[in-house]
Image (cartoon, rainbow, N blue to C red; front, side, top):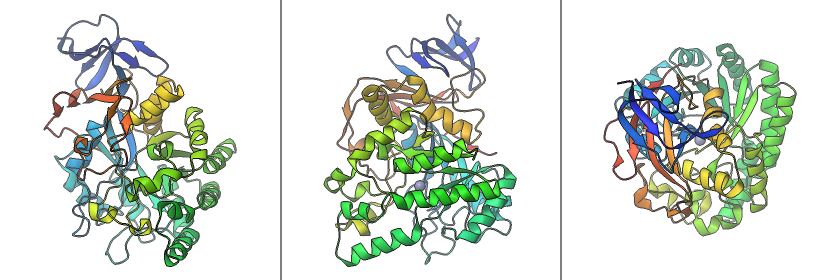
Length: 455
Ligand SMILES: [Zn+2]
C-alpha cells in the first residue's frame, strides 16, 4: 500500500493557498499532496470540511506535579485530552504553577517523568528564568531540550511554597538574557509593571472594590507598554531574542512593531480571550474570565483584531491557566485566581471570529494557529501541511453553530468563560502524526500517543 492514510475531498490549507487536494500520509509524515494519489490502508473523507494544520498552542499551563500544593489543578492526561478535543496537536508547556517550577535539570526531569505515557498531543517545554537559576540552571535546561525560556516581570509565584516560580528583578533579567542569548533560544516574557499593578490592586482592594471592572482598572494599558519598552532595550543590549506573551493592548503591539523595524528580534502573541471578551461584560461573566493582563475595553477589540489580520501579532494562544474551582468561585474579583481555562476553544472560536466574521483568509488562519509558532520556536516538523512535515491536522466544519456546554470540556475542571456561548464552527477531527486522536462522533481516543519534543 502506497500510504497508511489518505485524506480526500477536504479543502486543505496549504502554505500559500487553500485547495481541494488529497493528502497522503506514510509513517506519521505527510508523504504526498496532490490529486489521484492512489491507494491507502485507510481513507478519511473530509468532504465539506476545512483541513487545517493542527493547532500549536504555544502557551499552556499543565500543573503536574503539583507538589502537594496544586495537585488538583491540571494534569497531563486531562490537559492534553482537552487540547486534542479542541484541534490542538502540539502544546508548548509553561515552566510554572507545577511544583517544583521548571528551572533546572532536576525539575525538568520530574516533569518529563510525570508526563510519560499521559500525552494526547505532542508537548514541547519551556524552561524558566528566575532569580535563583542563574548559576547553571539556564544551561541545564538548554541541554535538557527546552524550546524556549519564560520569565515574569510582573509579580508571580507563592513565596510560602518552596521552589515556586518567581519573577525576575532587573539584574537577574539582564544576566539571564545574556545567558539565554548564548543558547540562541527565545525568552518569552509576561510584561506588566509589577510595582504599579501590585499597588493599584492593593489600594482598590482596601477601598472595598470587588468588581471585575475595578480589577481591570488596577492594571491600565500603560503598565503593559512600559515593560515591553524596557525589554526591547534589554534585548538590544544583550542580543537575546524575545517574545512578549499575551499582549492585551494595541499600544503594546505598536511598541513591538517599531522595535522590529529597528532590527530587534522580538515578536508577540495575544490570546483568544483578548479577541473575544471585553471589559464591559466581565462582571456578568464573573471571575472565570479573570486573567492578567486583564481583558480590556470593547473599543479596543477591533484594533487587536486588525493587528492579528495584518500580521503584527505573530500568533494566538490560549494561555490555558486552570486552577481548582474553589479558587475561581469568589464574590470578590480581587480574591479569585487570575487565569483562564480555555485550551479547548481556540480553533473553533478563532475560525468563527476570524474567518467567518472578519474575513480572515484561511492561510492567515493557519499561520496564527500553527505556522508562525512553529517557525518562532523552531519546531521544524510542525506547523504546515507540506510534504515531509508531521501529519498533524484539525478538520473544521464551517458555519456549524453550537453552544458550548460544561460537560463538553475534556480538561480536568469543566470551567470556561466560553460555556453557554454559541460558537459558529466546530472541530470535527484531530490527527496527530497520522493517527486520529479525536473524532466528533466517537469522541477522544483512549491511547496517549503524544511525545515530548526536545530540542
Ligand atoms: Zn500563562
